[in-house]
Image 1 (spheres, one colour):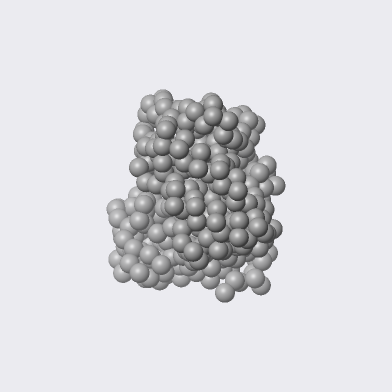
Image 2 (tube, helix red, strand yellow):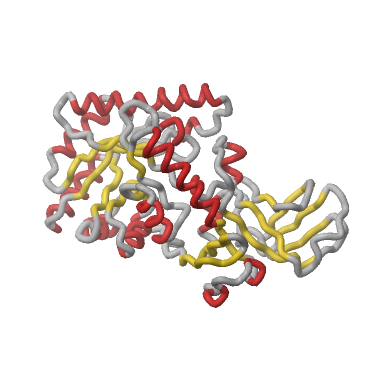
Length: 367
């Protein structure tokens, strides 16, 4: 349950374990992304909210200049639409009669857009949209190296674009991709060249479609790990990066993202069995370590961090009498996407005090 009565109180008054966001750092990260994407690159911003889960943050990003948002699942889009967000991309395929029925009904309440990469799925969405009396915007997902979903660039994409353009219940809005295969390239210039090469496959395919008179208004790409490069790729119209507003150890240590860490987990020391061992009340059910381990702040050199279901165990390299049992410790999130989903609310902290509490209404919306 949200500790609403503690708004205005010092952070130390919060019970733990609990998820925090530093609002000053968050706002700096938002401003940084808005500056690079909107003002320096001069393209649109449709930030991904899969790691945010709250309409409050979506509206903050819209206020910062974003023209719409991206969601991973239809259920998340329903949450955002119910909170007044109107321009929403579901960056996923919406498949099956139940989900497609929800999609065309949601179109009555917002300008929903989805990815497609399959002719049969195109037919199903078109049929449902016509029966509902709506038109659904679609982007063709193109595989430029991610090797997950998506149509191959070139003629395969062109063939699907022709089919969509002939569907009365659909509006062909353009193309989309995710250049994720470039994320872990450590050399900045090599990474930039690989990002540009991947996105040229996308934009060349868009031109192939335009040459046949097919509309290609939106060319969408870019996650937090690539946005500072992909935003400047010729022909790109919008960037989907969103997780960078939090940042985390994954983005900073593995993907070279130079943002400050806004998302942390507050825990309490519950045991000090030895001078080098600290046990706290935050384990795997509080903070994820699947992609990158969280990192405790201000404890000096760490020999090892181990998470079990409900416990965190920190082994220090050198003996220390602090922190004491009952004192609080704070962790930088390892990966924001898989940490946020473990919580029901997030506490906004400014200068050490609780300023706001945001319910994470998109949590658990997996369908």
